[in-house]
Length: 106
Image 1 (cartoon, rainbow, N blue to C red):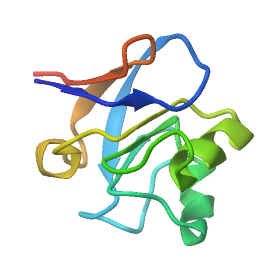
Image 2: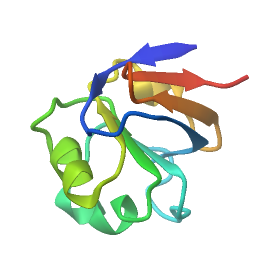
Image 3: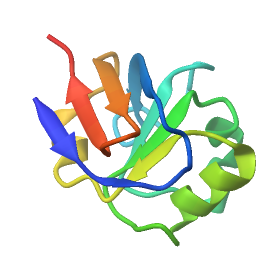
């Protein structure tokens, strides 16, 4: 399954990792996982700093997730429709930051 969004950081790479759906499990974020969220808030900064990347269902290049990701030099894709219902904590995912694609691995 592939989901498409907007590239919000200047990273031109493909990265893989384990998803952490913040809606399903707002605590116990594991450093190096990919943060999956409907949107980010200032209260989430301690989790964001531990993230390998951020993917948000809402927002654009001026959203909180996008701005914080650029400030902290973290890869980020925003505006990914149906992200929360399709990507769950523990899923292996790949982010293509050249195309703005989130792919769930089988």
